[in-house]
Amino acid sequence: MNSQLLGRALGTAGPEALQRAELSRQLHAIEAAPEVGFDGQEARGGGDEDPQDEVYKRTVNDLRAHQAGVNCIAIDRMVSGGADATIKLWDLEDLENPSKRYINRPAAVVKKSPSAHQYGVTHLCFYPFDSLAFLSSSYDHKLNVYSTETMTVSATFDLDSVVYSHSLSSIADHLLVACATQQSAVRLVDLRSGASTHSLAGHHRAVLSVAWSPHEEYILASGSSDGTARLWDIRRSANNLGVLDLEDSVGIVGEDGLGKKARHREQGRAHTDAVNGVVWTDDGRYLVTAGHDERVRVWDMSSGANALSHFGPIIKNVHLSTLLPLLLPSHVAGPGQQIMFYPNQKEILMFDLFEGTLLKRLRIPGTSAAPNRGTAGQANVRSRTTSLAWRAGRVDLYSAHSDGAIRAWLSSTPEEVQFENDEAEVIEDAEDENRKRKREALDEIFRDLTKQKITFT
Image 1 (tube, rainbow, N blue to C red):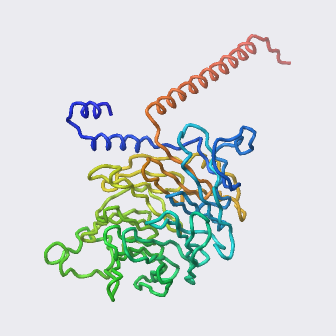
Image 2 (image 1 turned 90 degrees about the vertical axis):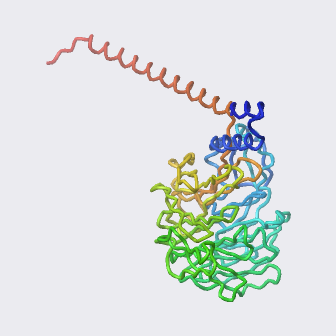
Image 3 (image 1 turned 60 degrees about the vertical axis):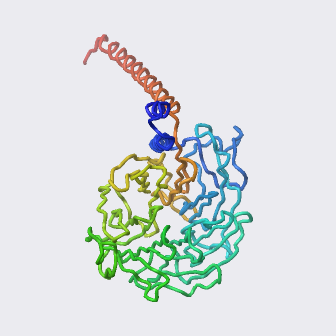
């Protein structure tokens, strides 16, 4: 960082380079915020805690945002969806000092009800053009639209099938919500007309994940439990553009090498097992898929070729629910680099997307000491990371977990890192001193015993 500041002072480095260097430093300094917790027991604003408050006396790792587990989170203002069918709204604006204890309580709660959801919430997303509205899907077959201000349901669509995830385009003029359901067809819901009858047929089993292209408003990607990842153009009568094939590292280039008169690929699988995660990079040039074969694959969307990025055997993915890798905005990582956070079982993995290099492992605090509770309405003993969300304009990461917790991962300053290192050294020195006293006490006892005369009769 000092070299960047010197370069800026000498005029050899521009402000963009300095900004990228600082963002990179902050990104690699992300750690668990041990003093930031989310407690879902009471619906009131967050803030500094009264020392007499029972919640304050508990550790942050004991707090639960949803008692039955958190299935998903989304950030504009943050909302979380639980396995208990509730949706909670959280205010992050007061969170400024990650080293100071801060317990966030929900600003509003949508409770389980026939008008909202009656089974676990599967996916949440904000309306791209207005954070005053968001959408939710659920195991109860419904897609709901909510007002963020009143937390009331504005519209409901019953799709007659479990809805695993949904996607709304951030650039399109149309208001089509693509829904991944237990049926083998992608369902399209038109928010403008209220129609939900149109579907895209091609998969042979349940669709688990869908994502609109951030660059082409009519292009959609989907992943299915049949192991295929398909591309669709909703303007065409034959919507299916073809499938991605894990064996193809060349792609379909057409007559001119740019796709002219290219044949559509109808055979092939993106993964050898179910595909439960589909995500685009923000420039639309690459698609990332995650599957039950415990692989993450990167696809060059100019040709549909497998980019052959390899992330090693560390990847875990066994649950049927949608599992979405988090791709950071390209300006955060810098030119030519893309950062991916992957929600692994008891940790969050930070990768270079194109190289497959593991950059950082964020261990989930307290997972080894999870309480043994497995009855209905209580935390899942086998805690796993279910969802990740990035707070735009900051270097803040939030994660949802099946044990009911929401955890914050914030960047530490060099001073904070140094302070933590010094504190760790002090604790280690104290432990060494304590061990030394115990050894001296044992040695003294041993010497006293050996000085005594022992008579055997």
